[in-house]
Length: 390
Image 1 (tube, helix red, strand yellow):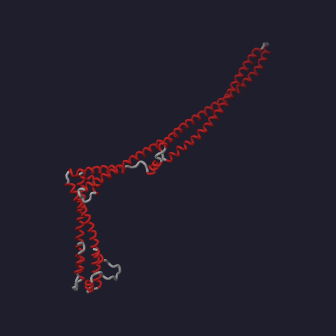
Image 2 (spheres, rainbow, N blue to C red):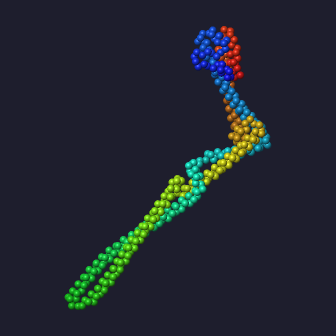
């Protein structure tokens, strides 16, 4: 066909010389210039189309032959006895099962992103310690919060004691003033009563003085106790404030450590990190299972191909993708039907191409005959045209 392609290839320049035999060129010269040019172009165009269609036809024929070979393989498999097919069916069963298992895993939605998996993989040896440290820090945070709450309550308690003591001191100061005023009044009143009543007021005055002294001592003692309580409350409150400041510093440090770890692994707390690690471990197990499944699948595929090659099939390798058909007759029937349908379509394309080439051949030969009306020989051109697709 390469010879014919060179023979009938079009020239790109308008003034090119036809690539026909001298006899045809001379015969064409008897026609008018326009008619000869148009006829030559028509022959070249038809030959180019026939060459292209011939190449396509060769490809279709090859595919048709392949499908026929596959159908022959199916027929050979169907004609085998159960004993002959036993090793093939066994291997095919393993291949189908393992392939299904592998496909289901690949379809499973991954629970960890690639970033999360890589991150867990980088700290795989330390992740347990990281989780335990995070749990410890969270426990410390809870204890610190309780301490801060306790210190806050203690501060409030000492503030209340100080307020009560100061209030008591103010009341005692007022009471001491009232006592002093009453006692001074009695010191004036008793002598006046004694003068007017002509009686001795020494005993009432002494009793009043004793009572005032006792009340004064009581007020003084209570006032001193209140002062001591104020001092103790202030000191205790200051100590609580100091402790609270230390606790707050520790709280900030621990809280920063917890926040950093949570932010680094994109979790909210140690439970989230533990769950993330559990998902990582599960995915590791799944990956190992997939690796083992893939290795087993490859092993049984090779074993299946070996068993099929012993039966001298056209293509043993292709059955690794159709293992279900080897163990399920319904799958085999469906596959056979599909191949037959495809082959019928190819046959229709082949018939159409043959008819199209035949029609173009007739047209090209007709043009050659017209170009050779003067009686010059056109046999060589005719043979070259007729040889296309032969």
